[in-house]
Structures are given as structure tokens and as C-alpha cells.
Length: 260
Image (cartoon, rainbow, N blue to C red; front, side, top):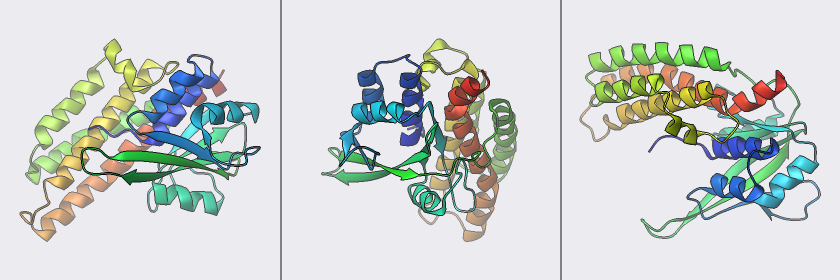
């Protein structure tokens, strides 16, 4: 399954709603996806948790004009602007959404219950104050696309040399996605996003899949520790580039709107 952060769905469909391109119910259903329920806690003006439809309306009333994604990792505060409390919560969750137009951010807390095959997933978005400042280390779409293409070529060479199972076919799938321009691909993002964002998102997701498969193929004790270390060293910059590209794709609607 391709990587689709919940913060990405919230930002993409929230941006479409704020732009008047989808209805509140359509946005809420798309954000929830296969989860059971999403609630938003800590919204100014609300005494307790509220549903997504009400929360999105409240955010708009508070002056929010757009939503950006942050996908931080240790040593890489990608998309964050502070303060420390919000950054720490976002880093723990490995994702967050930062509002434009109001100093607010949302961090998901995921709870799962039930047996395998019938897992009930409930998500609570915690609203926290954020610092109004440029987000950290977010590239433009053009930069992200160039970085992805280069990182993919380099990773394919390294992983092939390390004899990582599946690296060839997955890399080829990623290159095919990079060239794809099919209208069906537009389903990857909400209405209002440029075609280039769809393209970058598709490639970033497939690069992320390649990285995941490369890690998984080393599990089970069949790969020596030295080889695993070499693999991790090769994959680390690719992971970073893929996360930067995901953020650039999800944030592109806001960036385009700010450019006028």
C-alpha cells in the first residue's frame, strides 16, 4: 500500500473545501477514508471534541485560509515552525497539519482496537498553538521533482549493487509513475491541485514503497549486519527526499494560492 499520511488527506481535502471546490461532507468522508472516525479536540470556541465537518467550518471561521503538511523525523523538522511543544508532538506522531491564516496546528493521535482483519481505527486531531513563521526545509514542486528523479537513480544503482530483492521492478514502477500523465492519477489529490503535484506525489509514494521493500527484504536474519548498515546508509537520503517531495506536493495548493 502506498504511503498516504493522514495529515496529507486532511490538508488536501481541507484545502479543497476552503477553496469552495468540494462540500463539507465530501471533504470529511475523504479525510476519514478507511478509518472509523475522526474527531478534533482543542479547537478555540469548542468545549470538547467535535466532528470533522464542524471542525473544518470552525477553522474557516477562525480565519484559516489553507492547510500545510509537516512530516518531521529525528534531526529533520520538515514543515515545522515551532514552538517546541508543537514540534515535539508532531515529531512523536511523525506528521502534523499547520494552518495558514491562524496560528494553529493539528497533530493526530491514532487508536486501534479489535481483532486482525476487523480493526477499528479512531483518530483524534489535537489542536495546538504554532509559531507563524516559514516552514522548515520545504522545497518547491520543481525542486522536489528534480531531487526525486536523481535520488531514485542513485538508490537504484546502490540497491542493485547490494542485491536488494525487488529494487529493480519497484524502481521501474516509480519511473513509470514519473512519466505518467493519466487523468486517473488525479484521484491521488483533492480538486484544485496542479497536475505537477499529482505527478510528484505519485513518484514520492513509489519511492517510499521502494525504500520500505528494501528494508523489509533484510528482515529475518538473512542479511548480515554490515549489509543492513550499508543499505540504511544508502536509503537514508532517499527517505529524506521522498518526505520532502510529499510535503511539497500536499502544500502546493497553498503555495499556488499565495503566489496569486
